[in-house]
Length: 150
Image (cartoon, rainbow, N blue to C red; front, side, top):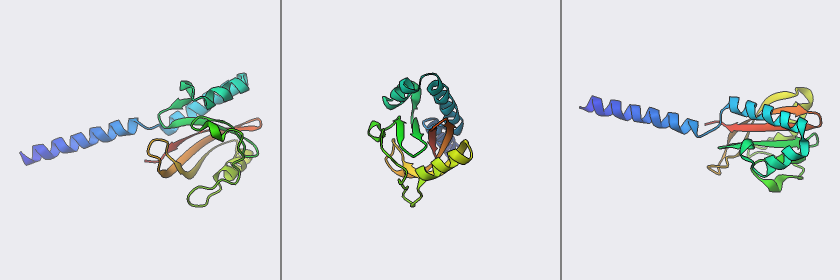
C-alpha cells in the first residue's frame, strides 16, 4: 500500500511539473515570435510597434512578449509595459549590475541574431529571475522576446 501511495504521489508530481512547464514560454516560442515580429515590422513598422505596445494577443503569450529597441537602447515597442516606449534604457542594469541593454545593442551590432542571459522581473511572479532573451537585428532595430529559466 505504501508503494502504491508513493507511486501515485510521484506520478502526480510529474504531471504537475509538466503542466507547470506548459504555463511558461519556451526558447523555440521566443525565436518564433521574434521571427513573426520581424516579418511584420518589415511589412508595416508603425502598425506593428503599436500592436506590440497595446499587447495585441499575437504579440503576447503567457510570460512571452516582444520588445523592440533602436540601436541606441531606446525602446520602440514594449509588449509588457507601454510606459517604457520612448525611454533610453542603455544604462539599465539587472540586479547583478549587468548593463544588459548596452550588451544587447553591442551583440546586435556584432552578431545580428543572438541569445543573451540576464536577470529580470517575471511579469507573473514579480520576482527577479534568470532570463534568456532572443534578439534579431532588423535595420536600425533590435527585436527581442525572452523566456525565464525555471
